[in-house]
Length: 305
Length: 247
Image (cartoon, rainbow over all chains, first blue to last red; front, side):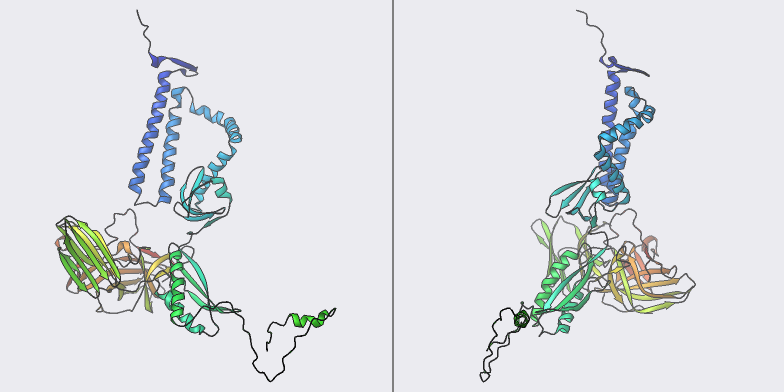
């Protein structure tokens, strides 16, 4: 039996204006594209490793993404003639196709454009602590379509870039320092000046409580049951929480060691023990006489005999 | 305390206790300072321990590479003038481990005996956090405890035509070069560029050849200290500090 001399690579698929596209052309196209993707990935991994200690992640990642997708697009366009497509034709077809694709994928394109703006404007960076639309945590990645947040509970939240870009963003580490404050309540019988001195001394001993902007400790309010002292402290943005939790307990312990106590809510009752005086009779409410009754109802400090 | 040690050894000074003792196949590095205690296991023989002063920016936590030295008294410098003053700076004690003859040792431990405090230089929105130190101004090199303080020879140069009122200077740790031998020494400069801006940096190595790594100052040869920052292989990190929020 004589087998016909068939070359599968010459198998004709479809004719184009530049000739006939064969199976070999298609395989070549797929192989070149796969190889370029592989090469881009290897190059990206290599660059990521070598730039790790030299460039911060928030700068390095967008550059690597640009390099990866950029090289992919360049290779893709340059090998299109292999499968019979003229890239210049895209310029003409692109207008019509763009409208069609735009309508079909409004959200995706919107997210893509928002992603580009996020990378350009940089309101947030990878590693920042942010609060976006009620989601608080660390930015782990800014992709072209979405932004990934790792919440403080360790959950992964994916936010579409359009949502990130159009909503209010609170960047917790946007500035190098931040302020926090305490309200410390002491008894009226305690020396507020001594308490302020003790609190200032504790703040001074904390390395991360900044000297400038200077901390302020002052009597802020004369409350119902206590004298309220406010302490406002500035700290480096990555250290403030640890300092806040540590310092408050130290303040409580130090004040107590020095006889200054944090009072419970209280009300002073004056008990009249003078038995010579006849007991006062609390007036009964009089019917239909509101004005006379009012002073009885509003009399807060009752005298008991 | 500063110097080269071959294990096993034990050294104690000013409440600091450092020892390296043999245990089984390896060595145990132990350091105590008050309640603070560090213990590390070293595998391998033929290692050398180096104790020398390092940049004062590693403890209690490395959060900034910048040191702000606040002058106890404001200094006024006439336009075009160049003057040399002496300041003090905080010293941290670095413990390194190296192969014999290896020029790139590994940091083992860093400790400090001085008060630690940080401050902000510049605005809240875009300033820089700095380690803070307050120094007296000297016209001569003062005698200090080398485990706590070092001497900085600062050359002030007012390149503007106006008087400059100087109350602080900020330095980047990446350019710091410390020398030690009995005292701890650093040589820096500060160029006043205009009313609000200045540039600070450290002097380049003055000696080449065999004496490289040593600094001759006042007929005294000091040894160059290994620094925590200088050992890092970094890319483009500025060695100078540009003071744009006043001085």
